[in-house]
Length: 473
Image (cartoon, rainbow, N blue to C red; front, top):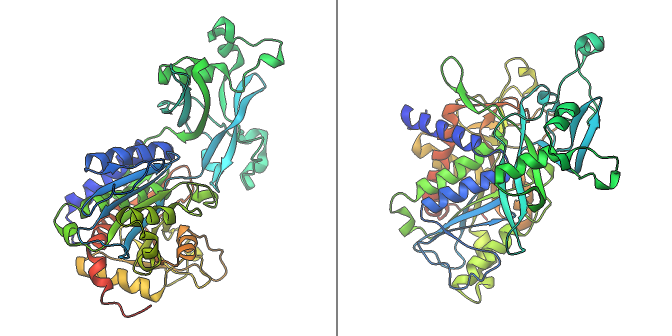
């Protein structure tokens, strides 16, 4: 069992719950991480500015891209160009609905909001939930420029109602829905919206004057930001379930929450990095300790701020160049000395569907993170990378499980294989067990949170010295 105390495990679970509740969108998740890192004496870098001579041994730094991805790193006191990177990578996004560029819709006396599906969600779980919107808004400022502002309407304003079984008896045999026509949320009744609207917002007969979004929705967003509707130039908003994440179960051992895939790993990675710097180990470290949280994993990661981009490579090159104008010559050596933990949640065995798991690889809640292995390279784990991690956790009493899919089952993937292939980086795929993955409400174990935080913390502290003892290319 883990050497962590009960109170330590409970505190980490409570902090994850708080993190999820403050992060209804990837933009909010990154903003929370930015504030935590700033409070831990990390200095923010800007990609648009030069990093030359800006990075020093024993320094702590972070930068964001698109407001939805963040990279944080601490430079060891004995780091030199060519030394390795101890990296933990995860993602900030989750399956959800996103507002269409023209979301204004009506039907049968209702105002509705047009949405796009994002990722592979269990969309039937979004029916009959109390929904709202969150994301970023581009606002025109007094100087004629534009500012990105975060918004989250913290009360239910939308709902996707299900059809009564009396109107379709076939629902008893299987719930089927059309993603385009049946997943459109209701915002208000037309009569109520018109009666409550300002005179210049009431519907007109002129199609040319209709805005892209319902005026009543734009007004609510503007009120949240204390700006005028005319100052809102554009936005990226996603729907989220307003029910808060909570600790539950009769023994208070489960976290019931949205977006545990993959805010669970995102929280644990940042917390593990910060905790690893509490002592003096960083002063003697020859490596850089780094966390990278990417957006767009749920849709393939191919974006400027996803894992299937040059984000990590350009970051590492800029870090090396900040020490030495010829730092690019050290890049390949540094990669060969580096190691990445790709952390994404894994499938916990389901008591009602246990036959869906391979009989010898059934991760359970409350028994620690699982190593993910796949012979077809859907995960990047190798014997070398698993040996390194198993050695580290064995020293600190952190349990590990192992996960392999059945041969007759499809296998998901992670950012691990793509980053490993792009960079030639030694990589292991791990993750905390999860029930109801991609549901609007997922379930994880409370103790697993603290175990994963501790794993990352000890990885950052121990890896550089351990790697010197590994005889393998």
